[in-house]
Image (cartoon, rainbow, N blue to C red; front, side, top):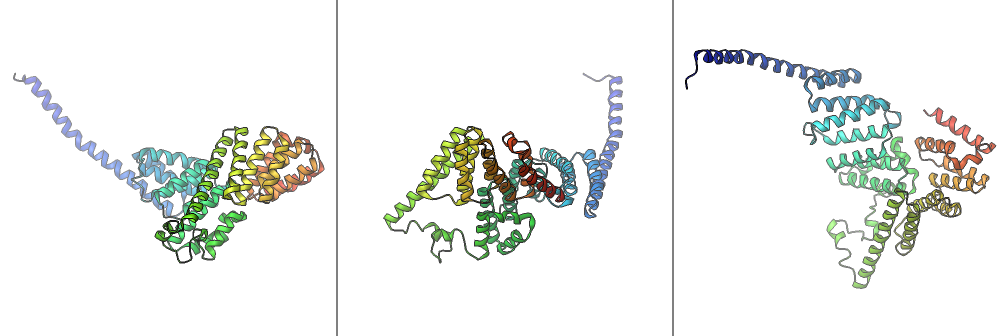
Length: 416
């Protein structure tokens, strides 16, 4: 069917409109792209000048103009830099750190594979520090884990996790992360530099209050290898030789080694299960699990004194939560015997003594808890608990409590 003249005229008019508007739309897109690029370049220039406030304004405009993942990543990074002008999570601007986290998450939603980022581990590393600044420690640990997955040969990433684990009073996992960092540094022939940093940089050196962490650093400092010390001959330096060590052992001795390995695994598996019970407030089940761990450890001796102290500390805390102060006191005495610097064990012991009416012992334990706090952050937390936990109500009017809390609070105020 032929088109009517009127219809042909309409089609021609529509075609002319499209042809005339296309260049205009193209020019608008080109103009928008140019504006976005100019804002990005301006933001980068401001970053180089360390004018982070200006960079934030420019990247914000770029993000609004183009909505690109790149603009959001740069905006988040600028906010991170501004938040950490003070240098550490403890001194960071919490508001800017929270804004950086929010912006990073927006950028990741736009680019889940981080394809627009040249070094993805930097994103997760800076997110980890921001999470630390706002007190979200578990999310910080997860961010450090993702950073390490992205850059598995970077020794600094497990080192940051080791520091945070120690601050969280998770000494065994702090030690594991520290050992991993040193192994990665040794593989890159940078272990001496890393040891020097851990010993001299106050940001990391607080970890060395732990006997376990100090021992790990000492092994690398003297050039020994923790794996080699575990029974491998001095000249067995390759992975293949280490792998074949059990295979070449006489049959009777081999069976004994394998049996000890299984006993070790049994103790550690039971400990992990007990920790899970504790985490979900199943304190009676947790106590049973910790007791079974101790029995299994008598056969394997897999737990070092620091780990034993933490097992007893958890037991004592569980007894306290159940109102069983006699059991708590007994377990917590073992905790501080195994590790005299266990500040949390001393605090739990102070609670148990106060509930039992042993006020002088409670004050002494509280004093030891403050004295052994591994950081100002931990001391601040303990002092807050000491002022609010109902178990310590009977000792708060005692002169000894006032003489302890006064100087502690003054010291914390002076360090702000």
